[in-house]
Image (cartoon, rainbow, N blue to C red; front, side, top):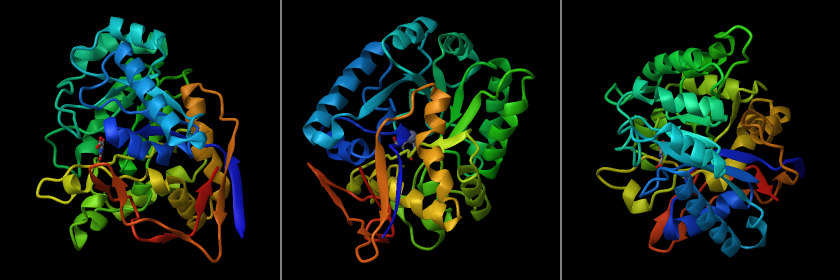
Length: 354
Ligand code: DOR
Ligand code: ZN
């Protein structure tokens, strides 16, 4: 049996939800990942330091209930940047342990109806994030633009922000295009004397999917997410970026569970629940591209370094059991329904254990 022991990974983008759903999905993340950056697009949203402290407590309580292997999981908290966010809210949130603010342009994805309509009015907020050392996480899509072009059009704003706020660390979340990969690499050189301030997260599913896997043959709602998977050439650029050893690209799973009936319906929610298979899928992709030696840095080093966090102490082991590959369940039962995980019903070559 082949095995690979790596430093315990971090997930720098996850949706843990609330209530019963939180309790049902948290173990998939908390049993493997040392830390995860928890997205604030809950209902109601996480808008202030106090909201984040409350949400963190709820997550920690759920981790205790999930059992021994989840208790040392550390949620990393974010607030949502909306039109009413002020510089004072940033300073107060930073003091309460919030490490990032997440900006969703209006209407681009789940629970983003309160997103800002224009970025310019938020410049005082970005200024304060820069001086406080709070990271700005960007859902990089422009609403109203044709869906395949939304990310690429957003890159103009990214370049502008990188010039105007050269010390504001920004993460372009869940990149899906070759153009975004290039933009992140280019911003390293925008301001002479200042190290590049832009990084990007890449999801496991965007390393595998193209638009064909969503709508090319049958409609596959469990592959539908925002930003939508793009062309094969885009997917290949993501794989090159993830396996390149470039520290600007690191793991954010964007694991985004929705109940099955909210996905398999006439107006389905966007989101792929990839947490239960994230490390296994990554091992598969990195192995297929002869880059297993680059996996640990992508999952366990580059993100922590960008955020200025110490590396995790523990380790996980990726195993490749010859006789018993990992059979991904068709469904995960939750209190009031079920969730279909990414790669449901398939067998995977790798299995990740703490
Ligand atoms: O597909 C997505 N689902 N993309 C996002 O940006 C949000 C997420 C969710 O919260 O469901
Ligand atoms: Zn997300």
